[in-house]
Structures are given as C-alpha cells and as structure tokens.
Length: 296
Ligand code: CAA
Image 1 (cartoon, rainbow, N blue to C red):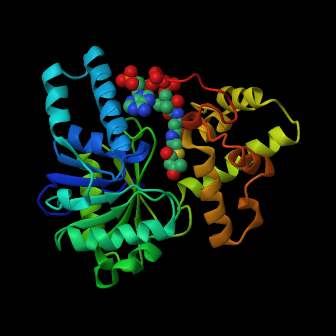
Image 2: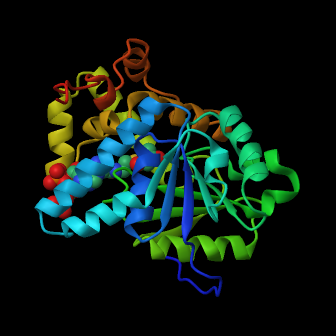
C-alpha cells in the first residue's frame, strides 16, 4: 500500500544526484521541477552534456505542450547545476546515488558520500537490485541514514518510488524519504531488502521468459510484444521494455537475483546473454532485440 508521510522534518531544498545517466538525469530533472536545487554530479563531462541536453529537450517539449511557461522551464533549468566533482555538491541536504549497478563502485561512492555531505544528509541509492544493507555496510556507523529510493524510467513519467529499508535504516530516514517522494509528486511504496525488491523480482522473470519464448520459436519478437500489449494491456511489450531498460542492465539484475536468491529461474536466457556479448544493448546502442534509428 502507498506510504503516507508523517514527519515534521523541514522540506528538502537541495539534492545531489550522483551519476548523470538515464536514471540520474531523470531524478535531477524531477527534483528541479519540484522546486529543489539539483546538483547533477558525474565525472564524465560528456555524460553531463547529455543530461543537460535531455533536460533542455524535455522542458522545451513541456512548454510546447503548454504544461509549463517558458519562464518556468528556464527557472527549472537554472536550478540544476552540473558538476564534475562530488565536493562541488557538498551543500546538498540529500544525496541519491544513481551510478552503474556494481556493488564495489557503489560502495566506494557511499564512502565518498558519507565523507562529503553533512551529517544530517540522507544517503539514498537508486539501485534496482543490490542489497541496501550491503551498500550501507560501507559507511559503518552512518548506515542508519542509508536507504533505497528506487525510481523508474522515464523518471518524469513513472509515479513509483520503491522505498527499501536496510537493516540499520532508521524510521526517521524512512519517514523523510517518504515525505521527499511525495514532494517530488511520486507515490512511495515500501518493500523489504531482498534482491530485486518487488519490482525486478517480478519484472525480470517476465522479460527472461519472453526471451525464452523467442529462442524456442514460440513467436517472433514483435508478435510476443504485440500479444502482451494487446492481451495484457502492457504499454510496451517485454522485449521492447528490455531494450528500453538496456539488455546489459537486465542481464546484470538477473545475475544479482540468481546469485542472491539462488534460484535457477533467474539465470539470464542464453539468447539475452548472447545479445549482450554482441554489444546489442537496446536503445542506447541502436540495436537490441529491435533496431533503433540514430537520434539526430
Ligand atoms: N522523459 C520525459 N518524459 C517522457 C519521456 C522521457 N524519457 N518519455 C516519454 N515521456 C512523456 C512524453 O513527453 C509524454 O508526455 P505527455 O503525456 O505530457 O504528452 C508521455 O511521456 C507519453 O509519451 P509518448 O506519447 O511519447 O509515448 P507513450 O505513450 O508510448 O509512452 C512510455 C512512453 C511512458 C515510456 C510508455 O511506453 C511506458 O510507460 N512504458 C513502460 C515503461 C516502464 O515500464 N518503465 C519501467 C522500467 S523498469 C525500471 O525503470 C526500473 C528498473 O529497475 C529496471
């Protein structure tokens, strides 16, 4: 059931988002649209430029559709600061890590986050499958302010925030996270700290099974998707969705589920593995299950 806010902490006025990929750039945009100062942090200036272009394009589209005025769009953009170093964002009262889905990378970032931001800052992660308790172990006594804040792609559109408490996460941290998700116009729903939480534990076997159906010749990819769209009312078929998420990301999440839950059903389908090995990663590489024209 959606969680309700019941805390009296002051509203969050600034957020640092670590990582300017698809999820990080979406989170920074929604934070800025909610009135917060957003620090978009990434060591790659290329990635920061892509994030800025995405923000510009999304806001321009909203102005064209008369959802915002041009002045509101400019003010939103002006609230986002693009920085190459975490310390340039140290003033933020909240930090969300949205880096690559690798435990060791995230743990190193959590240590830096603890050492960079104030003692009251919540250290959140947008991980889609990794244990919050494990990530929190990297920051020792500060584990009480670590929490999972799992948003969905495209962040400006999708309503859910899956809120995941680690073993040491306090009630105060959870309440503050629920209040922040609501302030960002999202619906927070709690889930426990098991690999993949609820969303990917349920979604990934579905996607995997669609690959098996394709591999075994049950139907062609476009027909598998059409059947699921028209028959089950999915906005995208599972194979299109896999390309949208990234086949490498799906693969990595399945490996986490397989390792942590120990059930062979989570092991990625050989055909999915092969596409990843071939560099067919989905939308981002121009080809996955389907082909995508280059964006001009
Ligand atoms: N950023 C911002 N806004 C976007 C957007 C983006 N990347 N993509 C689409 N939109 C907006 C459009 O501007 C449009 O807005 P308006 O209603 O204001 O006009 C609206 O979304 C609908 O877009 P379109 O008309 O272009 O296309 P559509 O109706 O086909 O919807 C979609 C596109 C929202 C992506 C829809 O296909 C959808 O909901 N797909 C499923 C997405 C999904 O399941 N996401 C979860 C993935 S799992 C995950 O993220 C977590 C994980 O751990 C793996």
